[in-house]
Length: 458
Image (cartoon, rainbow, N blue to C red):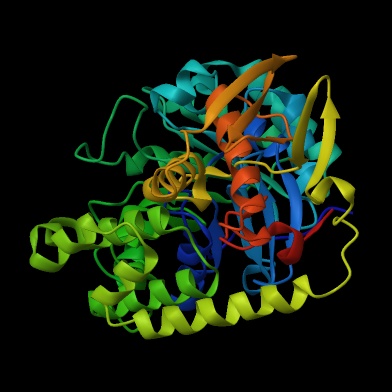
């Protein structure tokens, strides 16, 4: 049975690349948004992920091969989060919908993004002129998932063309259509074609969601004025929410510092990546990035450095301490993943004796100064040993490396995607054997916590 979402009379956070991650979605809901869309997630990327229950954060995470969080959701947005996908394939679109079905409330297909990446991949605005493919993708989704299906488009040059496309989309059984009132060639400085959205609303029976009002929406009351001007059922807000998410507040905009602190609270609670947190705060600051604090933000690299700027470092450090304590308690529980491959052991390989264990190199767990190869060579210099020597071989498009350190050889049983990662993985094994890192740094997660203790794979 298809789940039901009423797309009428809603104020919605628009899908925005890099902005629409969990902290911003929760912030929008906190301030009064009715529905929140994820950033566009490409079908290929999602289908390569593993669905993981993060016991420590209380989230469901979709993790790629490098343990980067591609999509994270939690109970607080249940029933209100719509996942937007970038796709040009009916088959992959359905696969994605079935994959995420338990964790989102609806599926939206991006048919309006004008970025070069989307256009070259046959996605986004490239679909506006491929009606048969539009019909195939949306029909397949409607017929093969229990989730309500929507799509987001841009207007075409002629009103009649846009209406015709809208009717085709409506015929597939989608529950609503979001319309950005600019063509794929137009940019925010161009006026939004509200009259085209209004014509769509008059000719379609499904809810039309108006988007593109960045030049008109400056306050909460302006959202309703924009809805009336377009005749739409609902309004989707993008740039205004990106710069100050309290645009959703019925009692008016909040001071920017308060909004940033509220955003950081969610970023801290759900262990958001520093790079993403920094980017979102930059969008809020806008021209204030030229201020002294703005320049300090631009120079920051760690979450703690960002939190210090808004006097939230104490809260951040307390949360990190709590998370690591929970991770430690979970590590003390029996774990089926701690089999022989997860232990260091000496193996005979040809005429060589090699110390081996399964150790995947996870790039985001190390900064430049703490890369395993860097730490290892510094250790040999300090102890006046010969520099580490690496021997790397290709195995069916993957790579494995053996490193010799002070007369002993070390290797990871995990095959890496390139030679550099293979050498780093071998260095990880050597460092573990030498007591220079502990097991929590082996096969780590994008949350900075050991995956074998914080996650339950599904």
